[in-house]
Amino acid sequence: MLLGIILYCTVFALAWAWGLVWILERREKKYLQGSLSFTDAFLAGSFFLVFVYISNIVVLVRWPRYAFVYDILLTTALAGFMLYKESRYRALAALRTRRQHAEVRLLELHLKKDPGNASYYERLSEVHEKLGNREQALETARMAAKLEPTVRNTWRLKNLEGN
Image: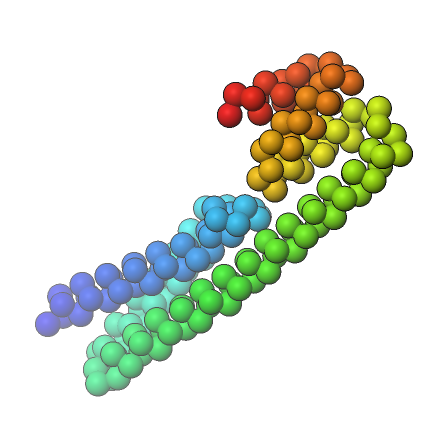
C-alpha cells in the first residue's frame, strides 16, 4: 500500500510539474516572447514538484478520502493558470504585431520622404520578415543592397533568397 502511494504521488507530481514547465516555456517557444529560459522554468517546476509530491503524500496518508478531491483541485489550479498565461501570451503577441505594423507604416512614411536611405529599407526588411511577409522582406532587402552594397545588406539578401 505504501509503495502504491509513493508511486502514485511521484507520477502525479512529475506530470503536474511537467505541465507547469510546459506552460511557462510556451512564451518562448510558441509566441517568441523570450525572457524565460529553461533553467528558470525548471527551477519553478522542481520547486512545485517537491511541493505537490509532499502535499499529496500528506493528504493521502492523513485524509485518504479527500486525496482525489485534492488532486482535482491541483489539476484545476494548473488548468486555470494555463488559461491565464495563454490569454496573456496571446494579448502580448497581438500587441507586438500591432507595434510591428505601426513600425512598417512609419518606415514607409519615412521612405516617401527619403527614398535613398538604405537603413530604412534594411529595417523594413527585418520587420517584414518578423511579420512573415517574406516577399516584401526580400524586395526591401534588394533595395537596401542596391542602395548600399555593404556586407551586411548583401548577406541579408542572400540569406532571404536562400531560405
